[in-house]
Length: 415
Image (cartoon, rainbow, N blue to C red; front, side, top):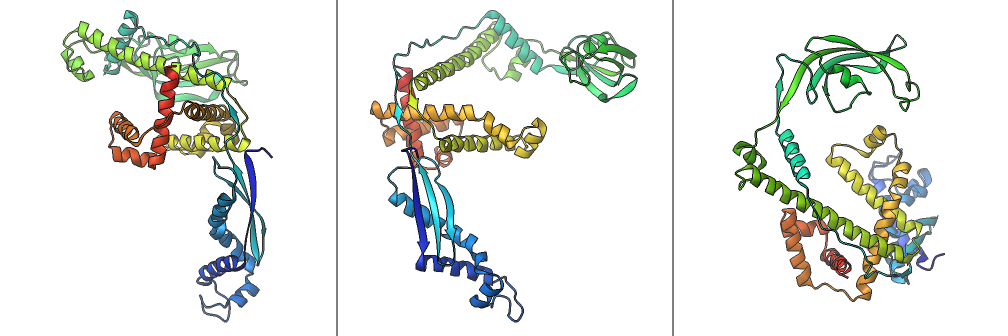
């Protein structure tokens, strides 16, 4: 057994166990019906004879589990850093025996974490990037209009009916009605969009193509025919660079194209600098944690994976999806997702241990005043009240810990 792991056996017996059994019996007695007795009036002896005392064990175990945990923590020589594991090794009418596994922080040896020779980059934005961003913004606010006449051009959306045939038979899943195909999106197989270019409304055309060699096994390299009819052509009308456009963007102080370029450049610069700053922090943490020596227990890794999976499930819920739906869409299993999240879990654990060890070695502390000021700033950045932020953290201790870790991170960034 690793020296940061401790197993403690706790036995619940005597009056404590009998009280738990009696409490469970009284709950079950209310609903049990045995011939010859009114519902809720079955004597304990009769219940034991007809139903069995074993039926009380599960609820009684749950009832005494918290007390078993508390006893284990009092006896423990190590401080657990993850939820303790609990196994029932024996249960009978006289006692319940638990084996509780506590996992503490493993031994950690810091390596080099200062003066890591990692270069902090400064953001630079080109005129081309500014022009591309302005064009992107214009496309976001583009007006979609139906072409009354004319042909399909690049950038247009052709609303089409199509039907595919392979070896003279209709292609399963290869047809659609009123499908909006944006020309240039490369949604379909190579050659399809090129063939639609130049078509007019109500025009029907047969397109002869070939599936790419790297396509699905049953269709790779095969010839395919598509009967395509253009039902409607929609085109994007980009807005002029004028006051209306500036207003749509919410740029109150912008009055001309030069000022627009300056504003866009400023926003792009801030965005890119933030990305570079994030990369700088990541590089520091990565190199310093690589220099650190630590052996991670499987229990610690699994605990972090489960935390990541819970967070992922919450993100899915915000998108209106369940985890089961995600598995169905992606053809993944719970084990697949668990395995995929392991590298990220290990990285997070190492970063956390690194910051904790550096904070201890450098004697980095946070006062309540610092934590409160930090909380106010964070609440302001998130657009919420300080009380809402505190509720999200859960406790003052968690807030203090978070502030301490961020202060330690600032120390690493500046050393």
